[in-house]
Amino acid sequence: MGNASTKTLFYHHNSAFNLSGGGHLAEFQLAYEIYGEMNEAKDNVVLLFHALSGSQHASGENTDPDGVIGKLWTRECHPGWWHDFVGPGKAVNTERFCVICINYLGGCYGSTGPASLNPDTGQPYGANFPQVNASDIVDSQLALLDHLGVKQLHAVIGNSVGGLLALNLATRYPDRVSIVIPVATALEVSHLQHLLILEQVLAIENDPNFNGGDYYNDEAPARGLALARMISHKTFISLRTIQRRARREIIRQKEEQLSWYQIESPLESYMLHQGNKFVTRFDANTYLRILDVWQKFDILKQVGSDSHADTFARCKHQKYLVFSISSDVCFYPDQQRQLVSQLQDAGVNTMYITVHSEKGHDSFLLEPELYTPHLHYTLNGV
Image 1 (cartoon, helix red, strand yellow):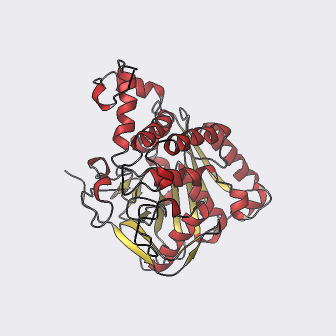
Image 2 (cartoon, rainbow, N blue to C red):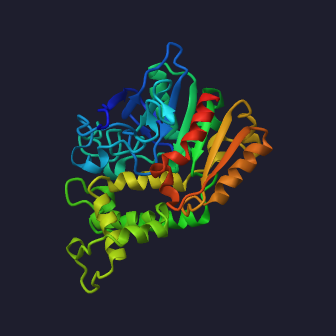
């Protein structure tokens, strides 16, 4: 039985939107999808924040989102990225809950981003698209929720980078959400993450086709984006999983013509293929913008607080379910333990689950059976 068909919807914000960094947008659009139905009180809504390169399409099948992305919506984008978790009778049960997933401001899947047309010029924003941070993304999504009449969320769930946004929303607007579920994320950006993000930024910016971000009328910085994806990919999937997948790899020498070095290893070919495949479905400027959201994440600054104790003191009415993945080398388990410690010290009701998996960071996409009982228990209260 195939996946149920889903449809991308659009929210148009037709007034000025001021950004935290001092910039502004005269207007913006958000692409989103809804699964399930809101109840009369509109208090059964679960907001789902996607990961770094995710989209609004979390569940079902969407082969042709009208007016969204054009050539970037490749076959890889057709199935919902959290389909095994969201739907009737699943971990996030759409027979009871209404799930909303929104493509981030700055994105490339239908929300206003660098590839969008600047209404002042009629040309793509490119380098002129303003800097956005976690608070800006959260505020833009709350504008959509206000438009839909949703005043309080039953829950917010954020995976990976999306978990940073979930924490931002929960601490800046504590009265707007009851349950907070950060999955494989952190309270702070680690030193290693800072360096890995910098490497990815340099990979894209040093591509001769990048042109400062104004490349939409010419060749895209494909090599730089592919290299950035390779840098990140090895932190998303465990080395054991990479090695197992690489054993089945056919050496694809023609995909990467190097001037001197010859690709002769299935492992190298696998990583190159992951990078080259990614550039067909994602925009380099959007990748940089979301990396910047991650790199500049500072919850104390964004909340306007002097300490984590004060930050979480306002969250005592909330319930947290924090997931850690034993083999994660993107957001190491120590980072979730730090988050849990701060929550517990502030007296916040917190459940902490370590998922024992060999699949690494991407376990939250691949192994619903390890998460479903805990999600079901927390969301349903039974």
